[in-house]
Image (cartoon, rainbow, N blue to C red; front, side):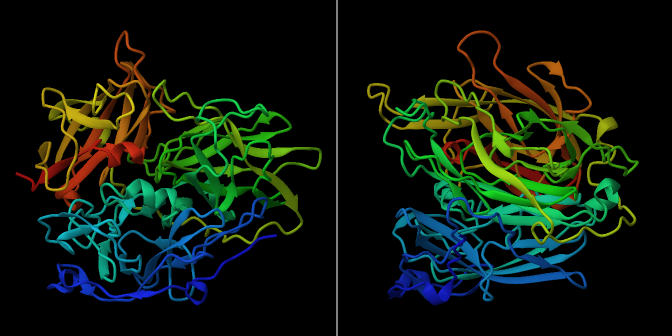
Length: 558
């Protein structure tokens, strides 16, 4: 049976007051200070479900008359296993809501940080929010969106929202924003992994996919958020086989907050996805995990099902050629890094299917990587009514798309970057690992707030980047504010089916001999929206928090 723990009424604790440094003159974007913060509570104010529960939908919030205005607070609490949780809750009690906008809309979010006051980590020179970073501080990234990196928009370089602060985001959605699935999550360096493992994330959708992919017009639309967390029952090393024959994962998994925990010797009930008999659906899936890599399949009686993919990473597939007519691609397996999104049509199992599941295959992350074994993510059942889902509208007119013309645009600059990692103290193999992403020819440097940009370019240009992996584990290349078109894998051209636009792509670990694994991508810096400083990094957030990130500065057009 599902269990929903509501927000503020059950969130008990001691009220804290902020020290004098937090009462300084508010920085840009901070509209109030000194709000009440609360000690983590058990039960948690965040959404909790019991194992084996039916998968429910996050609350949908829609823009109207060109605006979406949302107020939310960021809370923390303890789940039933004592693990720390984080979540965003609106005054109405909606937990991690799905926020819908349209191209050209203005999105305003008034976000209050109600996490209890932490300790000082560092002081930074920032013009956005506070200048003191606490281990309870917060900012917010709107992953995949092609919006401004300026303060009060998608600025993760400078924004600091301390405990008790209310900060206002005012984000103009570009008129050429591709329709599809994006998401939001905290992105303060050094704290991002912990926030994501705690569940602090939600979905952000630019509506209008049905206009570019008419196959989804009128279909029910299902949002599925996969998150990871610290394992509940792990007493053996990740990757080992327990006495019951199960591979020990590095991280547990949940689906729309229904947990699928690893506990040795216990077969946990899978989350239940209920579909209406005979009714195809659009599934909008995000890997909102901090570290887990997934390889997604739907299997009916042991047979992987063809999935009609209509969008990847928020961009309708094969839609940027100027025709504005998307072309679906069909695959039976969809690799999903932390941060990836996939939108595809699913036909429910028929009456003769005995077992229908969604699962992830085993991922080889390299000898230094995490253990991401094959697991059943959910069981799929049918009923006469199914789960209540919003219906997509009937298709209407399309609009100009952000990446049109990139295929024939001349490349102005070619760059090579690479991932690498080293043990911080070679004399002590148990010491922490330092992670780097480096422009070829430069010295590897761990990211820190205030570092100068590693790359400076100009608005209006198109670049070609080759990114190599010099380390023994998989890394995930992600860049903010733009997407890239995949051109080559390991020096070989990709097929038309795979030459899509992404904001997050895997590079396998190096074996120690032979060529480095690599991708070659075309980077689109032509939009004036993206002028400013933003980051690129590995989206395995344990790597990012430990240094694998850098800043790029886009100067105004010459």
